[in-house]
Length: 328
Image (cartoon, one colour):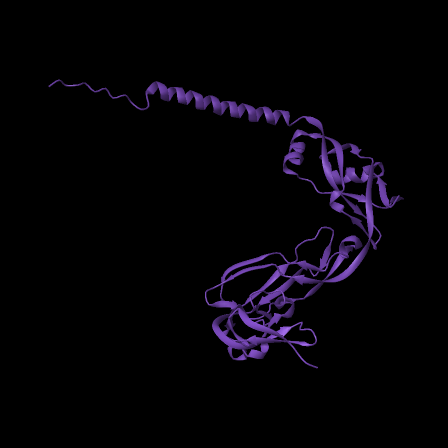
């Protein structure tokens, strides 16, 4: 039997390790060299441009700027590289304040000459930046009358209840309306406003939270938040026999239904179980649907129910009907 010689090759040879070390050392020193080069370069002064948002201040009390977020200027500045890097890459700057004391009307718009704002802008830029130029020279904008209005608040709710629990009655919002202030062109379109979303899961107890108003561009609110309360209880399933009525029957006709009542199956808060009576429901079918219904079956639906029940089902969902002409 011949013996075969087996040669084991090391996974990492000494010459390969030395090569890898040289590569890592080269990359390390290259990185250090780049950092040092940048630090040296950033010590010099450079000329660059920066775009700033502009806020118009000192307006009359009954006037407000329409679309204030659309106002901006580009300033050309001279500064050390360190400061420009901070402003350029870290957005380390606040909007510039332009005074409206030189306001000039023009064809339904207004404008101010930014050349008259240079000293004000220069002071706001601070000692780190030297202002060289402002563009554009003229800033146009539209003003609107300030309007105050009371607007209803709707909470934005995304709530999942724990097993065998439900919202036991209507939520309450306090205050139910807030004072809004802003341009008439925006305020006049508001019929209600939303809160910031409330997202909860596995809820088994009453909810009582403060929710901020969802911002609306160009609008201020007072107060800026509301308290939302949502009653939560365990529920049980209940069944109630409720008579069915037909609506929109024209004069001289009548509708006979069979059966005359249906079973309402629903979830009801435990504390309200004994308040569940037939007269708190209204179950109807519509004559206008019956006259185009070829099957002779009327669809019934719930037109009124209390707010402390949930997951309503009807048995049966259709009833037989006959339209008869009455004698007068």
